[in-house]
Image (cartoon, rainbow, N blue to C red; front, side, top):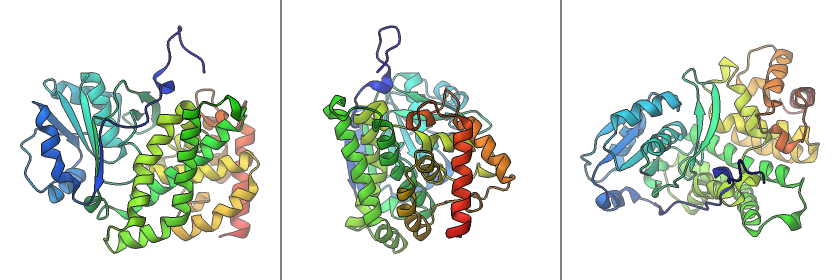
Length: 368
């Protein structure tokens, strides 16, 4: 790994998890106890996430509440930090963007943070980083933070009642952990990888196997609003184990081609309402085509179709002309600042465009 000025980047530092992690039905009952060591907590979230918190919180909380603006932008983090100058802990409540905003605000204030996910769309609750966007919702950067979470609290009673679509998106995002980590590490001699990186790869493979085995049952259980072992396994795979992949594997276990395609989609207005993990799931297929892993694409396609994951422009709701969209996505994803080249070194935009077009042809002629 390269260092900057002799200093190790935060993205290279092994951080396998939060200070404390609680996952069970009714887990919100522990929050007041965990807050006794702080004098001035602030909550950051959105309207729907805060309503969910109030519905499942067994006791009332007399804590200042700040509403984020939905962007996960540096501008909103700065605004919130200005409103919470006296805070000694920030409690993030919500989905990925709310939690990323809370983490970024805590970093600006140099204070601890607690994360309480109310949906299962990403591993944001577990990871010491944020996906940051511009105020217009276009992707900007990934910021790494000095602190990991003081506490990650998963209340399964709340999560089993959360929106199903976000859970599907979270499963898609988590499935990428193995495919991106494997694509990155295949370019290295396995004997040169540290035991911590191997731990991250093992966690990534475990998430893939869990999702392929348990997703169908977990979604059925969610439809029945029933917390079961299968539901808990998939929920923890999406939020916790997925976060552990990057925490142990560092840059070997983070984003590659699938997330580069996600980032590129921020420049297609019709995809702005498509959930993060849903875009990433599509990006997995593009990456696999680009790396020549067509057998894996064929294996995944039934799983995608049976569980509602996108595999084509039409299933993503993309209305831009297909060739124009493919070129635009490819040009963005092939940038030096993007992560597709971690899966395909020295990748060119033409290679990604061909992969997208190949996938379109494959899905149009064989699956749709």
